[in-house]
Image (cartoon, rainbow, N blue to C red; front, top):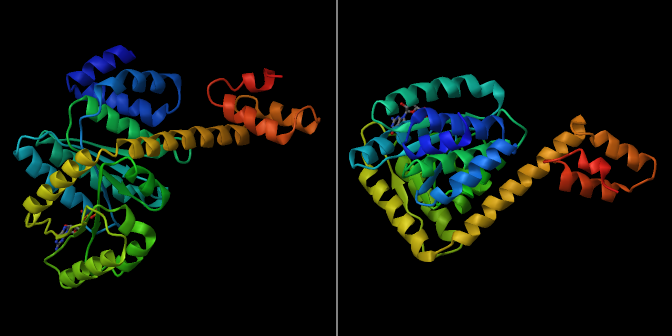
Length: 321
Ligand code: GDP
């Protein structure tokens, strides 16, 4: 399948083409093929509402996403789900097993679901996810629900490309407060306390509301919702709030801020890839270092050369005078 065939398949919502395209972003990130793909896809994108869902393991993210996408599909929407696993390879087995089951049950309802794990360089996962979002957008999926698992930077990166971020917590985890401290309050547009059937759920909601009240106040007042993902309780309100936030985002017209995040993410990935090449001597980085060693060029020059030419044509970095 060449890129044009893949693009054509994506327009037809052909799942083989969609999977192939996402694999290109997973395996050949920053290679010419991925660039060609994004260049040709990009004009076909821009319609989908990208919803990020983040929260600690065990709070019920996958159960909740199964429910919400199921309800949306019943309404005639075409949700697509991306599960991003940025966690350590040691905890990966359980995650993937869980997501394979999820994929099967969603597939029966015509919902596209795909897990992405980190196969490339460090930090590349967020960029793969960005590419995968573009693929689903071009294929006509809307909304695109992006679940992140793991912690730290990868979550924040993904969230900077989502239009709406829902932070999900549950009672009895003991780490609600930790999550709050870790900056979740800032990145969330909506807060969910799942497992509303469990003891302590209303206290957790109240705690979140109190903490939000201390933070900066915006035109968008961040709602705190309770859900029971086993019964579906609270989901109509949740979907209404997601739609209301999407409307808010569109009227506010903050497209530039998000683009800034997106381009910054790409720059960072290019930079990290250069760094990795430097460390592994892929593309003659050692030759550049040799020139520094012989005092032909200085380390600043070497850094600039590697950053400028390190990705697409590393060989040029040694040829350049
Ligand atoms: P994830 O790790 O955040 O994706 O969490 P899962 O979706 O795998 O859910 C973890 C556990 O919580 C599973 O045993 C679910 O059945 C259970 N669970 C999910 N939602 C609810 C809920 O609303 N109420 C209760 N009581 N259990 C739930």
